[in-house]
Image: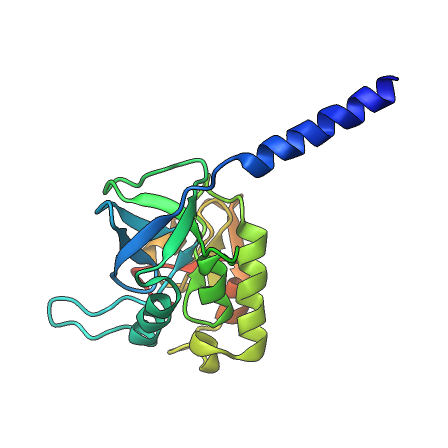
Length: 206
């Protein structure tokens, strides 16, 4: 009798979950490969990834920046998406931080990584899908897709990473030199650092 009641409770729970409405919001504008604006005028920054930057104030675009924006536009432009949040819902600029899902269930963050049009960017404590995103990046790296089709500029004999921030640096970078020995990770190549999910320092740009 107890077993029948347990089965009934499980079935009721599943039925309730199936009836729970899923909230979708339409994308109004695509800024670049990892930022969009909803019809509500709320800006959304994709969690867990960093797309190449479009040039500003006379500066040139990063490699693959326009391609990243075009693909993001094709995926979500004027389409309905579902946002899933992690530990932090907004950044210091007031932008929503989210994993963005299409109506078919595909995660846009991972799709851009798999095409080699973004890199994994760990921002703790928002690490729910880190493994999924890293696997997508590794697939692109193995296929030499997008950003991974060329080697790093000005390669160094080694690189220094911080296990705390998940960033890696050139050996001469002042930020790299400040890494505590307990957090320091040494990589023989930039590729190795990316493979482990580390992100390049914005100052020394390894």
